[in-house]
Image (cartoon, rainbow, N blue to C red):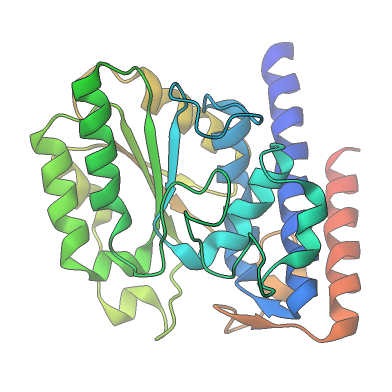
Length: 284
């Protein structure tokens, strides 16, 4: 690995650590939340916001920005952490998470939060909205990319598959979709609620350039994002990320059911200490 690659890895690893830490601190405000998802997707968000996307902290509506659409609105705590880390949302607003009149509601709302491109409370809608964004940017001649994150549970929805077909039909090579395969949803293991494998074969059959990676392997995430942007053929790009709920906090990783976590007051300190210790070890 070159020195440039080592420096890039270190910088993005630090961003991912900060995103996880900010998410835990927000979770502590309410004592509960979708913390497992925030911890599992932090590496992806770090690479998206600090290694791939064009954006301006002081101008979230800048026309030349790349768009990031959060389909799985319950992951909002993770995206807020990335937006705070990017300087788009002021850090002092962290303490308002989920409170009345906060710009950081528990489910993502585009009308409330700077940098939030869509409201994602109804699952299965984001990929179709992303198709509209990408098609509109294409027709305006914009070089901007549209990124969208959705969950494996959203593969249950017919609208997701219609959007997959539409994106390929319109050859939307400015669209990069990421599906978080953590195999958990409200009703149980995603693969048992509705079997979706072989997922790579299905995405390729729908006309997408598809990569499948360990979404908690930072180097793999970096390479997948780079490859998605440089892929030459005129077709949409998909990154399937296999992730582990609660990543970085061992006692949360080990919980059988952590789709929505309620954490005892003293455990927040333990979670932060475990995260800090793990990051410190990784720097040795």
